Length: 389
Image (cartoon, rainbow, N blue to C red; front, side, top):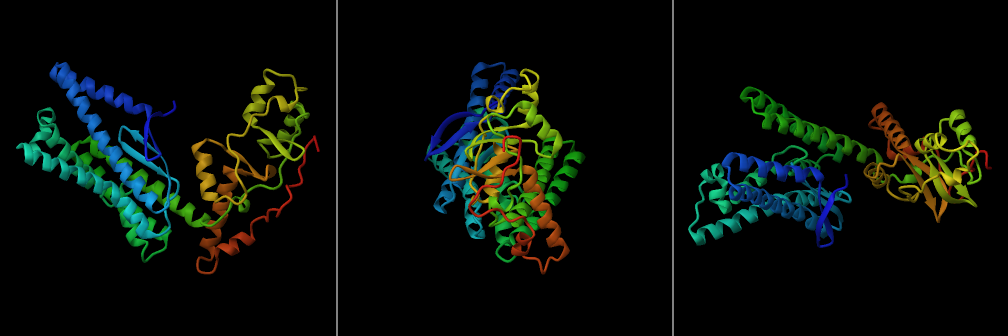
């Protein structure tokens, strides 16, 4: 299911993941079951919505600070466990990452201070006991929730903001990947502690947090390794330059022959050196059940979900492929097909780079790695092969 767009702020789209609607319904049902009162259920649901407004403001704190450092934000998405600001990239300068990371919790602290001023002016209660009866003092409850959000997010563990703050501070004196590995190890240690306390106290929430933190730290470490191995690497360094090309007049039978004869799974359909479409293995197999083998592939090939240029950053291309579930992407230069980028190829590049660095970590440089990669053509598209050529 697609995320539901609920608006935009400063040109940043704000979306709801469909599971968020289940959370709202569950909260409403819980309060109604507990109080047997429609008004109490509506207050409880309203409180949860107010908390997520604070979450949106938290994510906008990250996004607008990132914009100040020329880092665009693609979107903000609300999930039942919180929000996610999807930045186009993370700045390489540690202090920029530091300020982007602390901006979110700073917004929660600012909201708490504003609520404190309102409570002081109206004679409201500041007691944390309001959390046991949130409907009785909504402003007080929101104040403490915002402080809790700020404190929780500043824990030095990925994927919380505190993990990024710690990584940024470590990166002032260490390489990025090493700083991430250290911060991730600290985060995973905290996750183990959360898990132990959760088991001893039979607290499922702590167990969930432990799993969330442990997996998040592991993923962040993997992403940092990928970034360190592909930094400044372009699509042309990883793309395939030898692959089978079909013409629109080639048949499904021709495509099957190529599928069985080689290792290619997806076939660009090209006419006069211009990409017409991409015939994926899944589409080919499905077409064989409904069409004759003599059917031209031009009738079956679908438009690629994504195309990219050879000079695009590999890290950006990889992220877009994952987000749009594109396992194969045509690489175009001035509308001419010059290569194919696959997730498998990107993985092989990372494995080659990692293996070479492990073999001679003090002597192997990025340029050394590139020398061992196949050199892409400068201007001309690859010499295509296939039944139509």
